[in-house]
Image 1 (cartoon, rainbow, N blue to C red):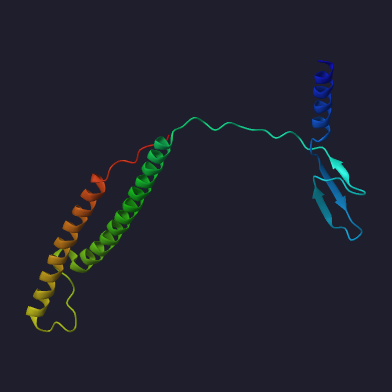
Image 2 (cartoon, helix red, strand yellow; image 1 turned 180 degrees about the vertical axis):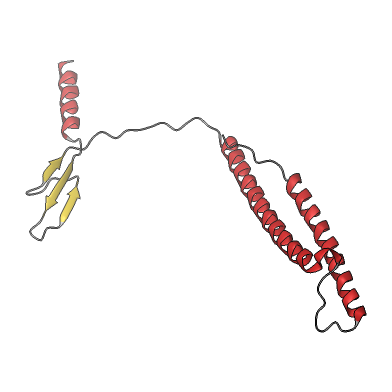
Length: 153
């Protein structure tokens, strides 16, 4: 019994002595070396204890679901930005055509000595205004029909 007690105590002290430390050694050239083995002129460094934070207990299905939602949200934002860009371009072009159309009485161009050419251009401008207005309505409806972005948890 006494033998076992001495054996346990000696193993305990050996394990305490074998605890590894971190040693810092600077040589003549100024090179710094860190090691767990003590050497000549090495100083032992006392490091703060390592803090271990347990991971939250979230299953991988929830994580994948969050990633999918975020990916979908990013796609929706991208689509929304593209539609808004197209709408602004279409509005700009519509305003340009309306300015040229001047409520059905656009200025005659020098190349329109023939009155029929002038009338053809007026009709083309009117048609282009109608097409641009329909395009704007379609784009705005498409933008409204995009799902609303949901908040991320």
